[in-house]
Image 1: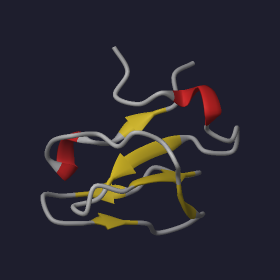
Image 2: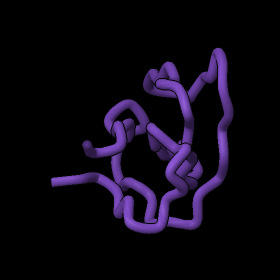
Image 3: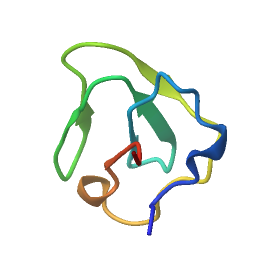
Image 4: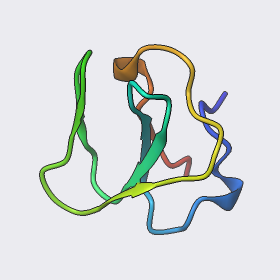
Length: 66
């Protein structure tokens, strides 16, 4: 079961995570996530208008289904 509905997510988004404010973000490279924040070392971060993950930040990361 997927954490997110990927049907309307742009194709260049490869990862999604939800921050501590309940906002879902898309990434083209896998971000680093811990219990308090999301860090991106390369690539982009884009706010997404999708239903966010409900739960801990660290559990919110999901790679685009293949």
